[in-house]
Image (cartoon, rainbow, N blue to C red):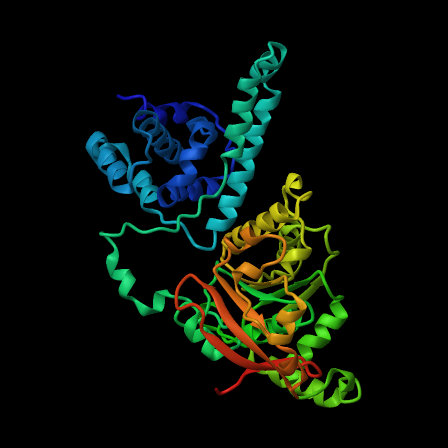
Length: 450
């Protein structure tokens, strides 16, 4: 009998206490087959002796043996064939087959992954205190210590987002696979990504001071909240992080964008009208909007990530859309970049994109500043990527950049007008111009039929 088969005999004689719990053992086996990328990282820390269930211990032993020989996790079919070939009819192997065929439950997978990753990190970082590490430290073998740290850093939940092109090409012709969100401006949506930006992307307004960047972002918050969310529901969850204005002013601007025609300075006087409108809107849309004020030039995406983690644990809530007002007021997670504006803003833009693609993808709206001369302001010169202030490189990580243009004459109109110039579009035309109006009293912006 092979070493793998002897696992069953060993368990029949040994008193083994589960490291994880019997239900968790079953979930780990299912996870190994359904998410082999995580198990490949975890394998070196596993041993059949950690598993109380002899059926689970047998499967673990077989998987580890194949990882050692071939550096792959075999499929359910291969393990099942091995069992049917090497066990006799009297061996009572049905429990092994049932465990092999057990699929991961979507409700248990994220919990099992999180617990497993924490267990693995504890094991890996625990090696720092092992005799091997102590001996390496005493001997000045810092390469060995670095290997321990590197192995620990490799423990993560790989999110496979890819396709075997020539095997699964049919999916490319499924129109439903493209998930679109809205900017709140229908013509702009038609140009952007053939229907609006998608989760996992970064959309940026590029505008001069006092043009209306924050107002546009508040409009993004309201129209995103009113848009179609995940799972076919009406309404999305929106997190608006403001570094520029306090939460109260930002919240009132969002209410103005929702009401459309009530000036901000009359919101309190018209409280009953506003409350009636809010309650009606809440009945129609499922999402929620959370507005967070963070101190400017002291926070990074780490702080936003921590905020989202807190909201998830405290409220069971996570956003579909993240709005950051605005990029230029943030620091990089990498402190070495923060002494230079060019590198800082480039790094922040990259970190926002990474945040957009993390786990359940979010659409990120933000804004950034332009450099403009007095003549540009008077003439309403087109804002393109060359006019980005401080750091041209911050635009590399963004999917869509919309230059916002306004001349002095357009500013003097009632309501004022803006022009959107599509400066960068990863999927669609560039340099299209859309005329809008923006009411600085009500905080509402909309396209004009031109």
